[in-house]
Length: 249
Image (cartoon, rainbow, N blue to C red):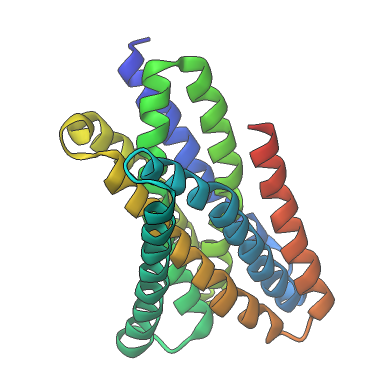
């Protein structure tokens, strides 16, 4: 198979794994509160772990190729804070113009942030696979595994806010497809327009957005369902799964 086609295929499959996040939407209605509380806390653990163990270290590494230690830490922190402020602004705009439904708002915010997260992921997967197929396969498997809980962060709030599995599926599909869009960007523009500084900015801002969503949106909304033990367990399991992904891949 042509290496470029193979790289596109692998990136597409890794991204499309997001749609598996819709599985909790098929649990019985009587488990609704438990499902929502667990899924939101689980997603919070996933997002925090990705931010702290993956996005921020990678951003620091990329900034480190340009700046010395003190400036790079400061610059990285600035863009993380910008990400937090951007997420807060998006939160307010969605509530003001689109919906006051907390779950639906969470789903929409998750779609936006995970698209921002998936595009550079798609770029990385495509380039890695193009240069080293073995590395690309390992990376795409790791990405596919952590895209499933990301899909849960989108599908569960959307489904329980709207009652539509079709809509939940479509939103998770859009988020997953953004990974393939990242591959297209890599193929068409990477050599000319994308550099370490731009990628580092994207990663740092995405980390800030995810931290804001995890701490100020997902966890508080999970606790609203008065299932404290479920929230704690969901959060810990989310962290453990992402820690294992980081360890294995």
